Amino acid sequence: MAPQAQDRAGGSSEVAAGGDKPWHCYDTVFLNAKAGMSGVDKEKVQKVVYEMSKGSRYFENEQRKEAILQQRIEKFREQAAKISTTKLAETKAAVDRRILELEASRNLDKTWMHVDMDAFYAAVETVEDVSLSCKPMAVGGMSMICTANYEARKFGVRAAMPGFIACKLCPDLVLIKPNFEKYTHYSELTRQVFRLYDKNFIARSLDEAYLDITEFCRTESIAPAEVAERLRKDVFEKTKLTCSAGVAANRLLAKVCSDINKPNGQFVLESDREKIMEFVSKLPIRKVSGIGKVTERLLKDVLSINMCSDLIENRYLISALFSTISTDFFLSVGLGIGASEAPHEEQRKSISNERTFSPTSDANILGKILGDLAESLSEDMIKENLQGRTLTLKLKTSTFEVRSRAVSVQHFISSKKEIESLAIKLLKAELPISLRLLGVRVSQFKEDDPSQKSIASFLKDISDAAVKDDDLEHDYDEQTPYLSDTDRDTSCKHTADQWTQDDRCSLCGERISSEYPTLRQEHEDFHFALKIQQQDSVNQLEVSKRSIGKRPAGSKNGPPG
DNA sequence: GGGGGAAGGACCA
DNA sequence: TTCCTGGTCCTTCCCCC
Image (cartoon, rainbow, N blue to C red; front, side):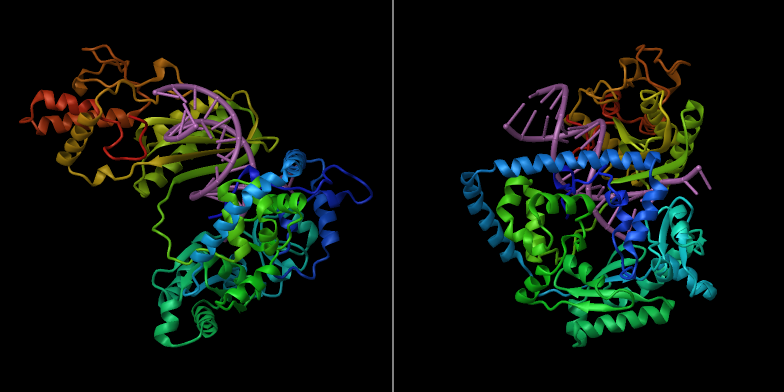
């Protein structure tokens, strides 16, 4: 897994330098060449992108980020200059030991293939409308392009580029609206082929997958190169789409290899340590998945690292400057070591929904958008049977600054009302504000699904939890900011029909917020269960009720007990 | 000082 | 006139114990 975050940024110090070619200062991700863009007039593209962008709020924000990056680079340089020879000597032993450990973990017995469909969305559109085949075409809209065909790439048009800039670069560009149902259908056709080679293949997106072809090569007694050719032929016959493949001893290298002879090509890297080290010595760091624009700048500008082998040459400085996780990643890349075992089944960690709109500071409009987002997120969560206890509100200001605000509750939420109510609370704390994007995300999922349980097991669970932890008073985390005491839900020991209009229990006077219907529902479910379990003693049930909304026994996701 | 939540950011397709 | 969306992981900061 790639390390990310702040300590992996970098920079060339031309930010607002100006000069007679000011566009050289403006570095965006879509100036990075992709397959099919080798003959592009980079100078012209850079100039057009700069001219179209300068002065905009987006551009100003990019400059702000660039300035921050520069500061980080300077800080790193200062730190690097301060590292004494004594400190480096101390680092040396640990780093060399780590390299030996990584070498010991190198596995050359596996054969991985990375398959990448060529300009997938654009290719699907062309299969369905052959007249597009010789025209420059991109899938996307005026604000953003998802992918461009190879004709369009000749003009410098590529994914992640705004459509209006693409149209300036290529006035004859045909823009097609994305149709994800269509792409999903074709993706499934490719996956039917992948399954024949590795039934446990790892799908990374609609157009990419990793296949462990070790067994296939062995049982069929054929070389990996032949397997790749056969698979690509099968995919084409099934879909009329071309793909590229990379074969290597691990997924990190296989991914790099699939890009080498793109489009409609393949590259096999022999599973031999010497060959791998030679390959890595000529591999620019930016080609590695996990090293993006910022990390590349940091490594280049601070340590003059350009090729992956430079990571090993600079290993002591890297170790002294970066975190253990980052250092481990860089050393692995430098040695050409990557994951070669099948990964554990990955579980979703969060689910979200966001929307960009014309900048507005109208609280009513923002509230309406939040309501729509909450509704669609709730639908997605219900479809996937998910409930979570942390809600994060994402905001992008009209000046493109991104912020997030989060709140955790002690019960699990999934309904529109709960999501909306928490999101509105977080938004209110930010007003007045002018925004161009709002997003809602729910995380910290329930580990097991209570809807699958019988009422009896539900009762048993809450009863078990109660005897482990019986001092719950409030439904919110004690430390949660943004919420006053009056916002806190309070558990109650009485029956559902004793709630008054203002959600206060008529017997004990404690308050339950009407804004958290799940808790309320749980309460009512509990009393419903109470009626059908009349043989249980009142005492036992009161204990059970007090634990509703708390961490299930043994759960890692709950708040501290 | 360690654990955990919140915030921000890098990166990927 | 128009610079996305949805997801993961990492780091830093801060609070609490």
